[in-house]
Image (tube, rainbow, N blue to C red; front, side, top):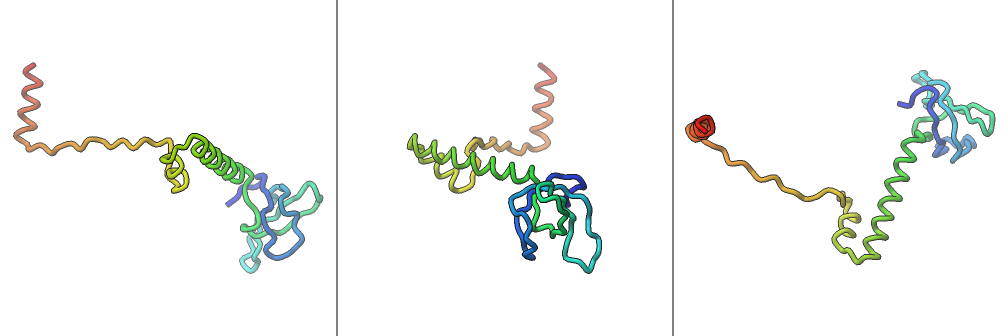
Length: 127
């Protein structure tokens, strides 16, 4: 749920109200009427009007910026992989794997019996 005063971008017009799609606005109120399909009242400074909008028609500006950064980063990695003929990086990016994460497997620790554990502790205590 978006907070009051939060800057949002109008991303759709589900009920064809002639909303200024692509423009920003601010959440000025919640519509708490259960019989109503609208969730928020958004103030658009460009048009100088208030709009009743459902939650699917608005998106937080921060969230849109994060999505754009992720998309741009992925495109840059694909371009780099193609330019350097790095097939492994290309497949990682295309398959949605994190190319920065190293595939380091931690060595599995063997389970010691109680007697072996006590023996190890006593050896270390002795030294």
